[in-house]
Amino acid sequence: MTQTTEIKQLRYDPKVELIKNKDFDPSFKYDDETYEGYIASFEQSKKKKIFFKIVKRLFDFFVAGLALIVLSPFFLLFAIIIKIDDPHGPVFFKQKRMGQNGKTFNCYKFRSMKTTAPHDLATSEFSNPQDYYTRFGKIMRKLSIDELPQLWCCFIGTMSFIGPRPLVLSEENCNNMRLKLGALRLRPGITGYAQVHGRDDVYYKNKAILDAEYCNRASIWMDIKIFFGSIFVVLKRKGNRDNKDDGQAKEQKAQIIASAENE
Image 1: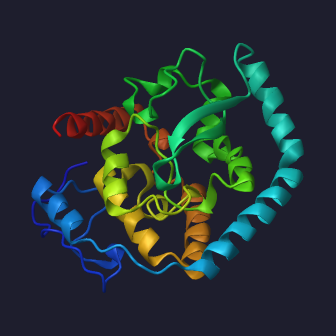
Image 2 (image 1 turned 60 degrees about the vertical axis):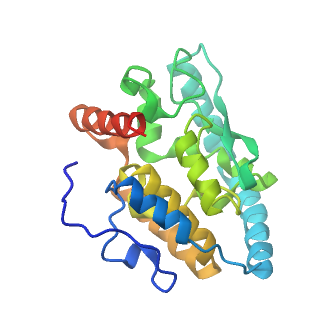
């Protein structure tokens, strides 16, 4: 993931949507001074958006409830396959994640890894995640099937269909930057603004400012665009580290670890 040195310094501009800023590259690591300046100049929207929040919550409740009913036969099928593939662990994987306003909540997934995998780390923090995936787990992760149990989180209100992706508590650098930018004002989402603009390829600090951008500009129309954009990304399997070959995945992982260690 070689980066060019010709990209200009990124500055906050409330009039221009971040992703439309020609100086912004989601995968690029800007210098510390750039990020510090961005955080200092960033202005959180004062709009309460009450109508948007009510519509969003009603949509999450009813659509998630309907989806859980319709997909229940598939949930049962996936549960059987998971137990046959690896009978030594549970069907569902539960993990503490950072939620709205910095409160933790239980995030659920179909279990895609062996029980020997570290429990409270992000996959990007594993030395070699491929060693831990179950056979069916690899398929689920490539197709994002493992995320389906988060429909329950949408139903009970700890998550939304659209919002900042909830991070593992060990990802302190990104979580802290999100808090500084007010990017945790809304419920975390199954998919979000950063997911349709690079997914795993997005540098974590850029992910935080994309999340903050979403919280400022969130609207029904923006959620619709992110929803259909996410379908496109999943079908194209763009930006998913699990879909890269082992050489690419290891190189990208080494870069992520090196970036975190240098801060």
